[in-house]
Length: 267
Image (cartoon, rainbow, N blue to C red; front, side, top):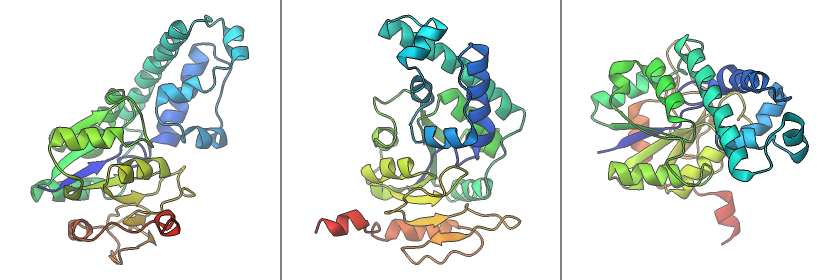
């Protein structure tokens, strides 16, 4: 049975700019951390996989001394975990208030895939509570119940490592040739490709300049009638119209994975 595996942030909804960024900044303010990420600064932070890891990146020796963080690795890690728990609460509240609608094509393609008997899953390095909140508000409770969710700290290494996708394949009992991933970032693409998965990219707010070499298709979104998709790169010559359809996903599964420029250079 074919499966459709989605990243969460930037794929199910464009969550980074309107969800995670303000939640991080509010958390820093509440805990007295003298950090406020601008849009440009956060565009660099999204290259770091995982919210706790992004927070940890600001904790220099000088900042730790300024805010009274203990000079003990375990205690410091627990402090960052407290920040992140609060950040997840703030973010989830924003999702539940309807501030982060689904990206174009998500409801359409997941409904079609479910009707055709495809398996559905989310594989994300974000906190599980955040991922489940986004999923429910993106596709509705009934369809969300059809998804398997793999998220957060369930693997030792976060994207661009392939761990989360390898876990999903193992738990779902499928091979890489039975699944297509929908990602939005270079890090996500690297993770999926390292797991042997064919990948479609729907670019998001902070990823338009990422390297998508090796993707089966790069589009502005999966597309809806009122928000058509724009094709950015089509290495398999799928020639989708204004929306990416389940027929085109089936075609991706039957085609060889696109060659990568880096692979060609090593031959």
